[in-house]
View (cartoon, rainbow, N blue to C red):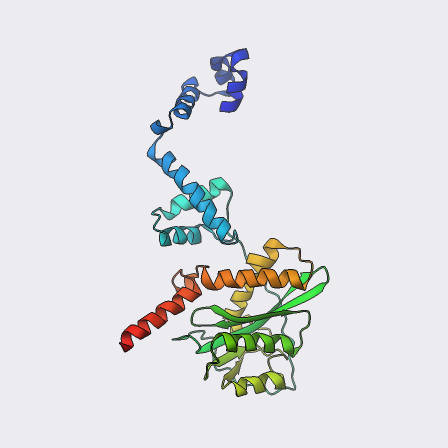
Length: 297
């Protein structure tokens, strides 16, 4: 509106234009005065101008998936004091909004003939320390060259993704590779409870033998029941919402692998998770080990 008046004022005058637009001339003149003398603007406007770049930075640095609460939490972590309602207001003005998760996908193919371990978790996804309970699951991505499947292994204590693998096949190799990565990354821990659904890959002889060899206790939920493997389903949902649905379409396996690698690194080391106190998984585990060392000392 001010730009329009600036363009037409020489031809028609400010007052006649404001009368047609039903705007007080004083409003226009005040805006022009503040434009020329920014130091006269109110404290709120100055504060908003300082906050907007910070909000945009945090939003862009975190896959453009954070909503107002997560952005507000990250600002607090950076010692930038601001009310949550202010963040909500400024994000709305900027057109920024958090990602919304879509419907879950189903990749469980049951094997009715395979031996089935008991459900040792019973929907209680709680761990008192790292490497006590891991959950595993598979999801998929549609690409121009066909489906790509991704297997994740997650530590329940911190939600840290300890292993993952992407392949174009749903054979046992995909879950074995994810497990092997997790074992090596975590220093081959013993006594871990490993929970999955009743998919044929997790009940295969090769996989169950590898769990036994690693000293793990196998646990499985039921088929087609997301509650029996809810935490793994949650990680899958975040992955699909924050990477796959947001950045697609995908060309091939290589594209999906690169994007997944980058996302897993961000998720483990920088993403704020409300379930562990709005800090990243790596930081949550570090705090645990620091407390354990202090107690031992």
